[in-house]
Image (tube, rainbow, N blue to C red; front, side):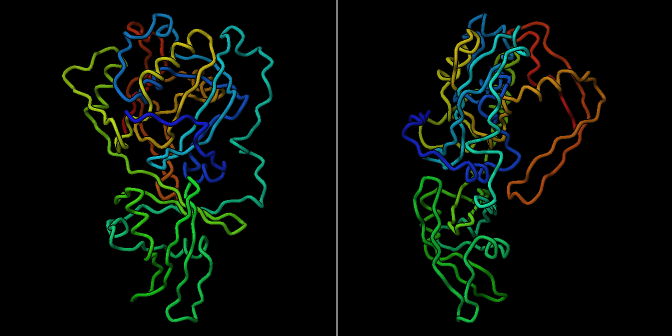
Length: 360
């Protein structure tokens, strides 16, 4: 397990850069807002399988805990460049959940909400092809990206060419040669691109996000292609509902980064947060929003309460919107509920976590 450095050692990200890298479908609660914390969802993010038997009876008796957000930090992983957030939460007495005079939500993620036009970020994301990720080749730039993000080329020159400088999310500048050539003609990044690919360990399927603010400054972010481990996921799910892991062995890399989305948060940190939350003490969580298997385990209170007021039954039609990796569109998935039930026994009795099973 690769421990994350203390957040005090990490560079804070501009909220618009963070948002562009995370995607518009990612929802991070704002400071002073009321949320629900789901320990089972947090367990799913740990670096190794954590048996519920290691948790105290008190922790297992509280499958959802109302909280207030005290602080939000927008950060980027120093190894993978993936954006993540660190949240500080204060549990709220359930009996006072709706009557406490909570502070007014700031409406801001960093400075989210009330965005000023002059701070607007234009972003374009592209999933890397094998050619793009070839460390001896170049990057084929879509026309829209070249026109909306990069400075204009002098098309009277032969060939039209320029050097552009972009800044990654750690504040490091990268120089790329931008040229318009070929038959048919197309935009390419050549010199400097291979160095970037090698340094960032990019592969086909990863996504790069180019961004530009109205001051003309350009930035680049990375999203990692996630490789799901179905056996590991199944073992974790069985452990969550109290069935045990069976014969499935779970392996976690100790160093570097894992494309399965595992190994980012230590089980010790997760268990400590769960125990503190159950005791009504302030606690801290780390959340990677683009990990394919994880679900949001800190959810806005109004969303949870609205969902819990629905009488879910088998046969109901439901839909879920998801943003595509290249940010080009939102896809709506529709399905039918096959089962809607909370466990009436076991370690998480009465938990609404993953209470719906849906088939498409």
